[in-house]
Length: 384
Image 1 (spheres, rainbow, N blue to C red):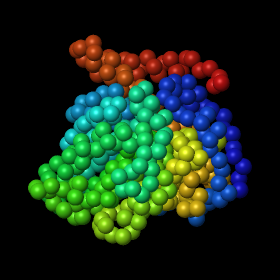
Image 2 (image 1 turned 180 degrees about the vertical axis):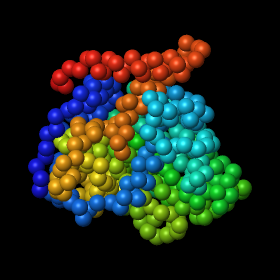
Image 3 (image 1 turned 90 degrees about the horizontal axis):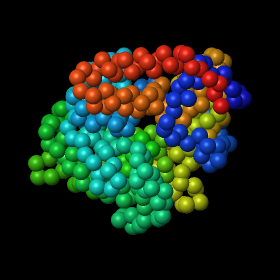
Image 4 (image 1 turned 45 degrees about the vertical axis):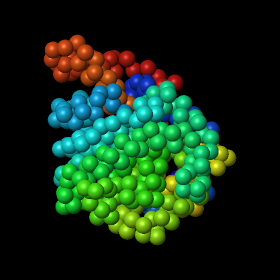
């Protein structure tokens, strides 16, 4: 097993970390996360097409954090995808059509549904924690009895989910009603962090009762496949709840579902997000995924079932992989698939500020980006 390496930060990386404003949970990771006894290696690598698929869907989960309205983003995709703009490098959202944007009744949790005509997908995405009130619900980790009577779920996540459930289901039903079976062959449910927990609770209800996704004018849900994947998910329920959901799938309750549940961990060198370690195991909660994924130096690994509750893994790297310097060497809760959610959030704020002054907001935004680039080149201080 290759020892963990320490990488010297480049000037660009030093500036990147100095500009962080979001919570990256590195301290929690060091306190709460433990290493599995199992060592990942080349035999655990996920297929390239799976890695690419997860990277695509990740874009939709990431942009839920925008300070710009969802409608504005999808109305201005071409501009926002230009070099230097917030969606630079976000290629999979191109040509997506916004069908519904909604805000939950609890803590104003946002979500949206889009249609991707070239992939024939409906993509439903929930935001992670972005406000103080949402964070308060993250901390409400008391047990709440799930309606299935099969176990308890996290009370804070449950309240957030209940506040947005009807809106999300209505959006999906309308999306299915507006498109033929030939036009929609897959429903994707995704979310980051707290949004991942809400996504899991929604899937749980769909597994229990497929009629939730159809009405008198909507075709049978079983004619559409479903992919479900989340980024950096916390634990949301007891082991009995997870086992019940998996049994519902295995029993063929939704016979055509393609069940893909990925807890996507970002580990670069010696730090990963601490969210998958929360709440602590002592609270009785467990992860939903039976075989989650682990991301290291651009490689995606399958985590064995027996090690799924661990957040840290030693990895045996090939000699060529050892030569690759990581793009985000300190990891964090906001770095996925080679993308920087810190940069995305910062740039959306700049767009919003530029728009408030009226006139040509694009030119004012470009001037802000240029000024920021100059300051990063001139002021490079040692990283603490």
